[in-house]
Image (cartoon, rainbow, N blue to C red; front, side, top):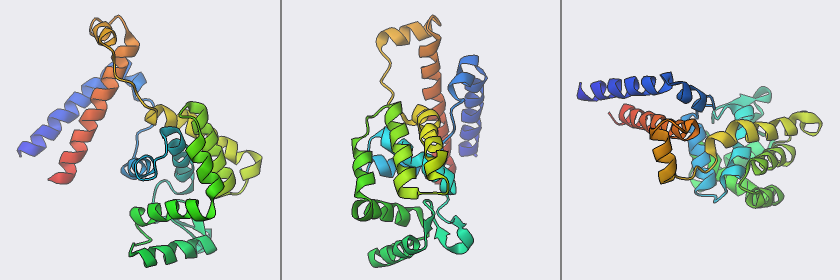
Length: 220
């Protein structure tokens, strides 16, 4: 009962934050799903990519599978978060079997993704490792991933550009590194003389509350 009461209180606080005009503007960027967050953490953690490179990958995976590791396509010949097709789908299954992993899981597919990049798409991996950690870097990563790794229908006639723009305009605003507020910004925000700084504080508070609610909901 105490846990449910705490969750309700946190939800009320979150609602109050979102009712603030400044907060409404702050949360217009897309909300991350659990799988999306896990993919981002793997790309930037275990693979060591910067945030911009990760945004390029996220934009493509979102379009391919919506971050669903069980997604199928092409009449059953494509599978997973990257919609590995035909021989690539076979390699996914064989790799996971050899590593003691389940190819239907996000973990198995992320492990294979890293393996495939290193062994079959080194040019794409090199691009990801070299992009600047900026909005333009996110665009470059999204474009390159689509053009040379996913290679969907229309990749050479606008789809790659579309996914690069998605990485830049939808994912970069969510995942770009946020510098800590300075003492001056905090003081300005408290006095409501700096709406931008206030918006940043509200956004961080909302993110913290969402995280706590998520943890409580899963733990108990």
